[in-house]
Image (cartoon, rainbow, N blue to C red; front, side, top):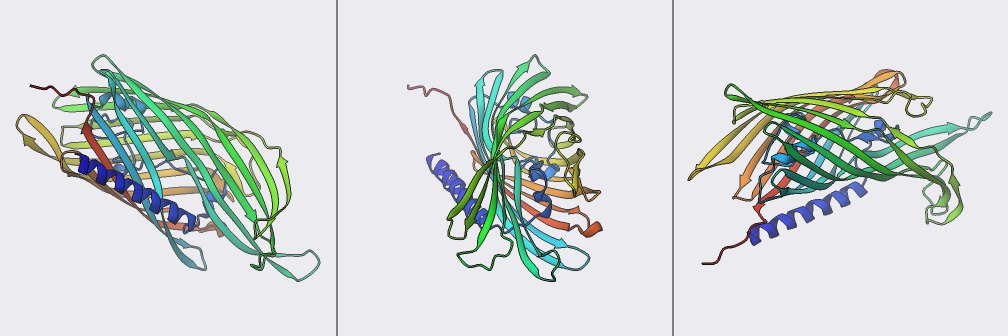
Amino acid sequence: MQTKLYLTLCGCSLMLLAAKQTSAQKGMNSLYSSYGIGDLEDKDYSRNFGVGSAGIGRRSGNYLNELNPASYSALPTQRFFFEVSGAGRMMQYSTSTYTQSAGDLNFKKIAMGFKAAKPWGVSIGVTPFSNIDYKVLNTKYITGTPTGVRSAIEGSGGLTRAYFSNAVQLGKHFSVGLSGAFLFGNVTTTDSTGSTGASSDVFTENARSLRNFNLTSGLQYSGRVGNMILGAGLTYRMQTKLRSSQTFTIKDNSDNTYYEEDVRTSDYVIPAQYGAGLSLTNGRLTAVADYKMADWAGKNSNESDYIYTKSQRVAGGLEYSFYKYYLNSRVEGLSLQLGANYQNSYMKVKGQDIRDFGITAGASLPAGSTLRYYVGLEVGQRGTQNKGLIQENYLNIVFSLSMRDLWFFKRVEY
């Protein structure tokens, strides 16, 4: 057990180090992350990934399901769960005139969970909530002259979600859960108009800090229908006003500051989100389907090139699990998944809906009695080429490592 734990921790450290190094290289450049608070992380980078990131109505004692906090009451007693996930993305950008490719690797999730008491399960974790990474190059012209000035606007940052989730079993069929999270992060925008690359070049920087607490509640039902088990779930993420502070600075490439000012900003509103999901399983074959909706319209100030709108997400998939039998126990072996998801973004850009469609697949494989490896794939398309916008064709690759071990028991000496 000590050897496996050591290998697990080493693997986690390598994944985190790789994520830190690659994110610093800014390999990904998504135009759509320049709006609002960036690209929202609506995908679930755990075992739910291969079924379209659906799982609100699913109860499982084999992994940590943060899509519905009520699911944690299904964790087995005397078991400790530890999970870490990373994801790589390869992207092809295309417009009516050109095509370009990019890629990156990022940390996505670290979490642990266990049964604190017989009816009470808990989980603690950290995962991205939104991501901002873009660079736009263009030429600005001085009024009244034909002179063109090179302009580079670059954005980075995003929000992180640190959460504590717990659930309690109510009777035989129902469980309720509550997830308390702290959302925090920075949104940094730099404008280097007229820069030549010299150390004396001056650029402006707007750094906005956002933070506040957020609550998500969940309800799950599980009952037998013939020889099948039906699961149903509901979630409600409460509206949150992110407290905001912003600083405007003028710097040079040697990081010397020439001017700094605190800018008055308004709070940023994340609207309430409603979710519903179903699952049906015979123990080997499992089908899941989810729906999520959040109405962003009127919550924040619209800009000249984009407006906030209602976001919706539909996802679902199938999973088949193979089992092995040891003595009187049934142990899960290889699990295979196939799914799909469709999403309408929380904003319209230049009057265009930003739609995202992906097809997913996944495989979960045991490595001994305590470790499991998970690999998920997604092929998808987002955006449009209309009105000068960019269409993104992408491939996501998710790798997750989980440890499940016996804890919280006393050794009996004879």
